[in-house]
Image (cartoon, rainbow, N blue to C red):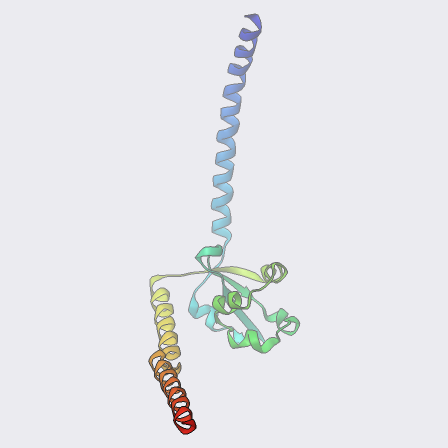
Length: 175
């Protein structure tokens, strides 16, 4: 029983200290998170768009699934890019996330990219509308330039019909 009292007494002495420590850690986390948010630089699509040359090339890479869009100044990396500078210059000054993800960059490439981080991409309502319009225009262009599935089906049916006709003609000629 004395042992239980000692444990209870020592835990009741420690409990306020642990609670105080926990509160202090929560406060510290909040302060550092707030300070880091304040230190972040935010860029608009218009600002990023001004940096689309070999002398000054910025990219927007990232999406909601990987931490959100971020802005990178890749000017110093252009000559070192394994795919060549032209690949990056083609998407310079704009959202390059789709191109970056489609290539399937390695972990090392992502770590290299992180070295060129300069800020966050500010996605306001006007920018969302502009990006949506660009995506719709791109989708419409892809749809109009592609071959219609109906046309493919018609060509396939004609080819099958022609093949059937040829085999029937060959059978008739043998008889």
